[in-house]
Image 1 (cartoon, rainbow, N blue to C red):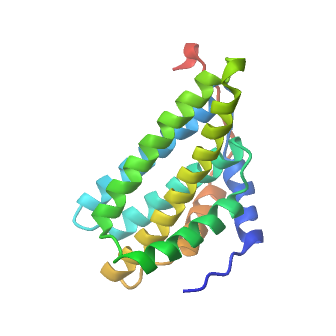
Image 2: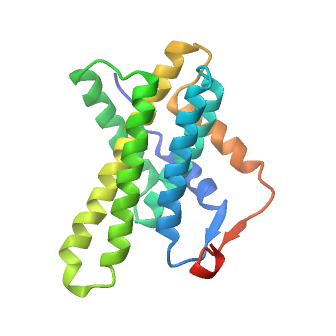
Length: 197
């Protein structure tokens, strides 16, 4: 399978996703990682609702918003993450049979949890000068985990289409989420300091 990476589409999505909220907190990356965990769990919960394909598809879009925002917080372009995710997706298809929807969602939840732990460790290590090599490794590991989430998301959209042929592709999922983001009335400021939790 050949993918065309539509960088401008992903760049436009990134602009829209990053305009939705202003994380004014030293813990911004941690907030984003926890949001990502929450959205993957929401998608898993929707799957348990008698194969609620539309609900899973919608939550998957929310998951991509957090993938995009967390990537941007670490300096990664969303188009770069998606391009690498599509390459991994192709490798997975060559190597094995596709995952079932529930199996894919459980794996996404595990990866999101691992990502949240990596972000926590990254934030902790930032305060220690001696840990610079560890920080660089953690930075790369964040990218790898974000790429894995995109690859799993593409596999998931394939699985959803096997259940309901009217379900869309990964790019359709982003387009649906973009429409939802556009419908939001204003910028939300999330301060998220210890005093605001």
